[in-house]
Structures are given as structure tokens and as C-alpha cells.
Length: 215
Image 1 (cartoon, helix red, strand yellow):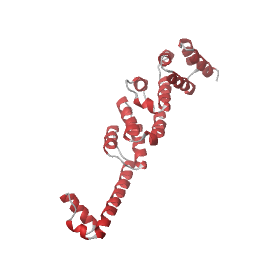
Image 2: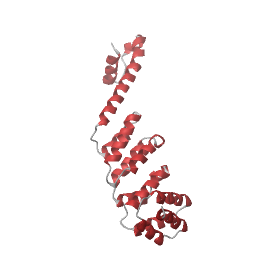
Image 3: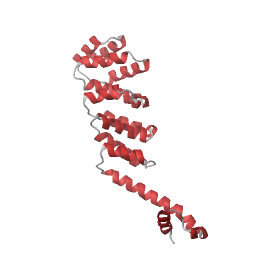
Image 4: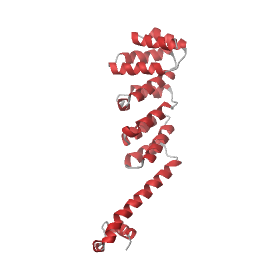
């Protein structure tokens, strides 16, 4: 019998053929053949994800159940899910794919890059910012900076921006430094920054607004 025959027998009977122990060549070939099949399967996954039409939910379920996929596969499915996400629940799921289902140490930079390129409504950014347990903010300051910046850029008025800033001004010092960085990275009209400065309560924020006004 060949290694493939042995594998078929194993799958059908849930046990190895008794004769395999008497033929050391077959015993050696079996794990090699299984490893070969794993490689073929991994390559097939990489090709399947190339032009897939999966929803964010399907990407979420797939990566939740299938582990140890190739880095190539992981990058493609993270990017696919992030780009498909347009509503809050889908954005949250796409963040989970790259930061929970896969290693944030390996893929946080990709998630950050894709998040920075997202064009989402103001209410989605605000829900991400004000979620009761914003676990994704604890993974990287860059994620928090992007979400704050996008909240500023999509805000309907300077008053809303000032409200976000004043809320952050009450938090711990590390949050405040993130806020100041977000202000420095946000491009808004001078008139908007002047109004935000007027409505802000912290001296450091007023200084950051002045820097934007005088750029």
C-alpha cells in the first residue's frame, strides 16, 4: 500500500492499517505525505483568498476556526475584511480578525494602515471611540490616534470636536498625550481650529490649536 492508501484507510477506519508497523518505509512515508498535503492545502487557501467574495462575517468565522494559516493568507484576509467593513459591527469584526484571531504582534501594522485608509461616517468613528470596552485601543496608541483623528475630520461642527477634546481632557495623562498627537495630525480649516480653541478648556489644547492655526 502507498502512503495515500494508508491515509485513506486511516480516515475511513479511524486507525492505521496493522501492516504499516511491519513496513518501516510506509511508516516513514506517512508523516511526509501528510506534511505534503498540508503544504498543498495551505497553497490552495492562499489562492482561494486572492479573489474571494467573502463577507466580513464569513472572514471572521473562518479565521476564528482555522488557525496556523500562512502569513500570506492572513495578510490577504485581514485586508479583505478591513476593506469590506462599512458599518460598526463589521469594523469591530475586522479588527478582531487581525488583532484577536491572529497575532497583533505580526499584523497590528497592517490593521493600522487599513484603518487609516477607511472612510466611515462620523457615528461609526464615535462608536469605536466611546465603546464600553475598547480593547483595540489598548493594543496600539496608533489605533486610538487614527480613530480620534477620523472623529475630528468627520465631525459635523467645531462644537462636536471640542466636546470630544474636552471629554479626553478629563482622562489619564497617557490619553491626553494621545489626544494632543491626534490634534497635530488632523487637517482642518483655520476657522475650525479657532472655534475649537475658544471652546476648549485645557491650556495644552489651546496651544496645540494655535500651532495648527499658525501652520
